Each structure stands twice: as structure tokens, then as C-alpha cells.
Image 1 (cartoon, rainbow, N blue to C red):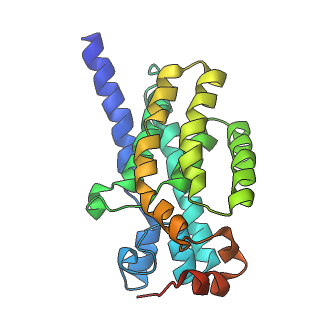
Image 2: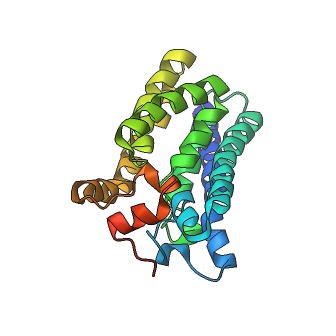
Length: 217
């Protein structure tokens, strides 16, 4: 019975995260503007694409929403299942998967950067700031935003295990590395061909879009 209860609790925590993860603000903003964001711009229902299509304010809103929904998922699961030591990690991982593969959107979701950031933030401001600092160095060196979630999804779980002592939870978070990498394969291909958007789009949007030959459909 105890094993069955533990499995049920784990599924419930992950299910909470997955359900909340299905709420995609970029998709909702697109619908309010009269289009499916998955058919416009880069086709990714995330903050960068909505920023290119609707401006920086819309991009900031989507980013904040995605970070918040992940943090809410972790906090809610921890409060509902205080005896489950990895409830937060299960909900956080579930939220990222729900964002990337949402049933409500025929499993065609975003790429998980902001959600992953929200999960890290939920485990501590220091965790978030340290991750932000280290990933900012990588970002400034390469100028490719797509490298941030790929490296963070591989490195943060190790840090989490070392600092928290919860290696079960670290393994759960580590399971996100493969799906996040898979979601970014097309970005790696664009890097090879010189068509991947660089961080420069934040201050030179027109120049970057011209460089990569970006066309809004």
C-alpha cells in the first residue's frame, strides 16, 4: 500500500505540473491577435517568437508567465504533498514537459527555457542567480540563446543534487536534458548554416532578421 501511495503521489505531483505547463501564454497572445503562433515567424510558441511578432512587452509578459507557472507548479506540489521529498522536482519536470509537449496543443509546444528558469528559481533565488550568471557568460560568449536551456538542463541537476542532497530529485530534473536537447536540434542545424538568431536581435532586430533571411508568414 505504501508503494502504491508513493506512486500515486508522484503521478499527482507530475500531473499538476504537466497540467499547468499546458497553459501557453505565447499561444494565447497569438490567438488574441487572430493567428496561431505555430504558423507564424519561427513557428515556436515561446517568448522569442512572440517578441519578434508582437514586440518586447509581449515577449516580457510571456517570459514572466512561463517562469511563474513553473514556480507555481513546484510550490503547489510541495504544499500538497509535503511528505514526498521530490514532489517539487516532479512537478517542475512535469511543467517543463507540459510546456514542450502540451496535450491541449496537440503536443506542439515551446522549448522550455523560461519554464526551466522558473523551476530553478523555485528551488532558491541563489540557485537562479548562479545559473543566470553562468549561463550569461555562455550567452555573451556565443550569443546563441538556444544553448542556455540545453546546458542548464544538464548542469543544474548536478548542482541541485550536490547542494540539496536529494539525488532522486536531481535525477528527475536531469531527465529533462534529453527532451530539451531534442527540442533544440533544429536550432543546432541553423547554427551550422548561419541561420540561427543571435542575442543581437534584442537591440538590432531588423539587422538580425535580415542576416538570417527571416520572413514572417
